[in-house]
Image (tube, rainbow, N blue to C red):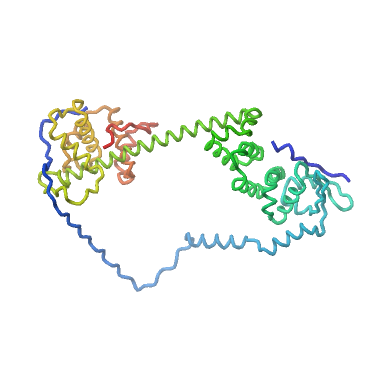
Length: 425
């Protein structure tokens, strides 16, 4: 009896000094004051119309969801049909194909089913010769039980869980060799959930690359990078270093790249935290100079006392200390006092974020607006980048289209990082 053989065993391998006083009222002895709760206006109730509701527009998302759900229900195969296909394989009724394995086990099946499910098997069947009314093909490199599970899956897409766990590696190779994507997906899912471990992940990675399974390859690579110290001591890693040094180099490069990205992400988070603190400092500065807080505020405002309700601005206490120092410091020039220098920078940053300099109550706002006209392009770009970062830290850039347009013009191409000019408050 002549059989067509196919072997898959080979696959198992600086500012200016200002001399005029600040118009800030500082209270030395805080007084208690009760803060009245603000009255909220009630929204007027909408009158309901007596007219009936209009019909829904055609092509709404709900209609699309309902049609999609109905289509999925229509595509569902009834259980009885699957049972019939399963019995057809198990009983071998009217079979016309004999599949032989390495241990000469004969598996009766139907050539039309196998040819429809696998283009590779179809090509083998077209070359196979008839003998006694049966076509014969041979599948080598896998146990007969694994081949039986493979052919049964072609009929009904069913399998026993115990058999899958036992032969999942052989089934993955068979699904790749005979081009059965549905079985490959099942095998990859089983390997990810039940089979991967530090002592075999290197072997799984090599098998995933041989079988063209990018998802399994990605899962294995992430597992190796996440537990590199443990996995690099396993026997699989030692064998891979000797047999496939190129893969070792790729994994080491991926490890370095992952560490670099992790450090860059931590750096960006830290910078974003600083920019967020600057944004809160700008809010607290406007709050103090316009509305006043418990012990500090404008001269024409009645202070609320230290026993009032807690301030909702988290940076208010730090700004209050800076303003008190700035108003009493005798040096008060950039470079002469670190605290005064920081306050100067905060005032200049506010002026660049302020759109109402004529009515703004923050000191020196108009002064810095006029100073901006004499700055060079490099200094102007640096400040605008800082403003951009501060506004983006709270997602406020979308509400300021004019500022965003101006910053996009002044920001040079490729500039995506700027160091904050002032430290956290």
